[in-house]
Image (cartoon, rainbow, N blue to C red; front, side, top):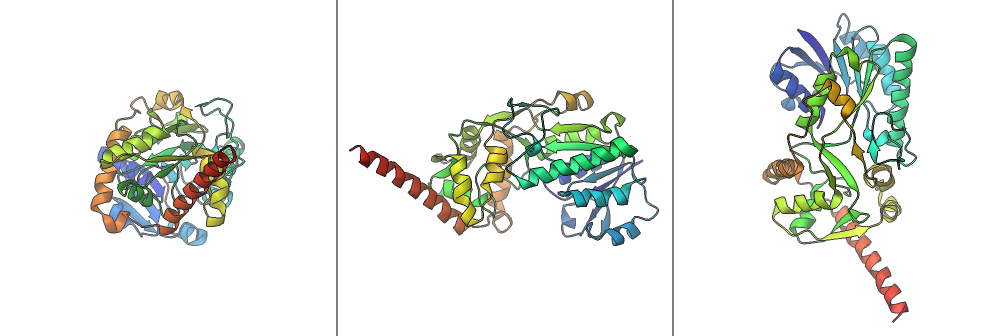
Length: 347
């Protein structure tokens, strides 16, 4: 039986991969994390309770252990993948690093994105760190044969989350609350840019196909669904699922980026560096290894699954965010005042 270790393993993406492996069988699954979300791990999963940032303690716990695959889901900076390299060099046949599709050039020369699209993101430090992680790992592959595979997901969600363009530090709920209350919700630009959202169970199909496949070593793969929507369609689908009319309020992404800074919102990164740009992913490379990879949970279905869970679990999922609510109202007030002033000048 093949043996896989997940660093993390209980997050939005990784939990779906772990569930799929356990359902399919053929894998002995290990999780290395602090044990804070043990309830999300399927039965039969082995647990190594440790803080991955404590390298010495982890190295001691891993003595004598080897793995067919090590999956890194919570590596964000070069020093963290350098630590992984020291820990797992010679201990695994494949090390899969979860990077990000936000690493692709913003804006790209072509909205059709492949693994060969240039990596460059001047707007978001998160993406630049992912690029630096990739560079280190691929360098070790070229120099020493370290068996790395790079995975680049885009906007992946599950039954506990709603994918949005503009939200506050406490997540999506306040936007849902505004919809339910009949208040306008902010949408970046004019809502016509193209975006891809992927349900985590679909992502897991592509990811698990790469595990243990020698063709994936030394390669990068983007993993997304095939369904491309405009942001207007995304928000309209959410409103339809809630049974309420959508009241969109359109604001320039550049304006949101500047207006968000004093309030602690990094829309320069999440919008200008990611969601404001149209992208259409070409997943032909992945599908040569994972021919079953497709959108089996379309957004119209996935969002209803998510809302059913969210609305029935208020304590877990409905975190109020009065600061973001007030910020939205203020942005709308300021833009409407500017409109009135411009109109008055010509009156």
